[in-house]
Length: 132
Image (tube, rainbow, N blue to C red; front, side, top):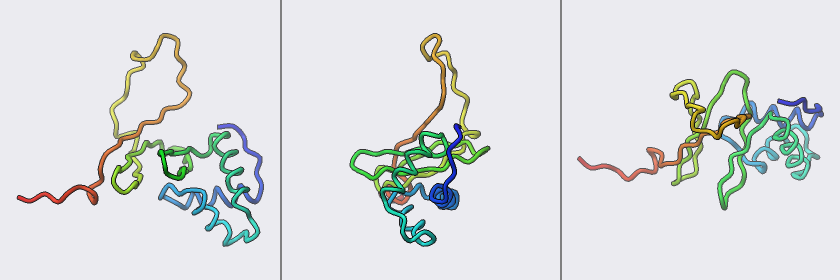
């Protein structure tokens, strides 16, 4: 992670993201931050999120036709995501519970700087009911 200059707007956005476990979009973050900083614009929230993403503090989760969602990178809580095709819910998947992947499949000399793994499927609530 690179150092991101701390402003009160950035501190407020980070605090909202730390508290959220729902992978919120910018509009939701904006609504939450405005409770403490009423004059904060949505544009400032987007610029703040862009700076936090560039600084490695926040990651984006993007889906075609949907608002970009954001996830705060908690130190020591390495995780990936499972995304439901039905309702769009995003679930955290503990990286420590997954088998290690071999770098042998990568091109020779490839330098990994980050890893993102997403499982795409259908959550239990969206699956058709099974009759016995």
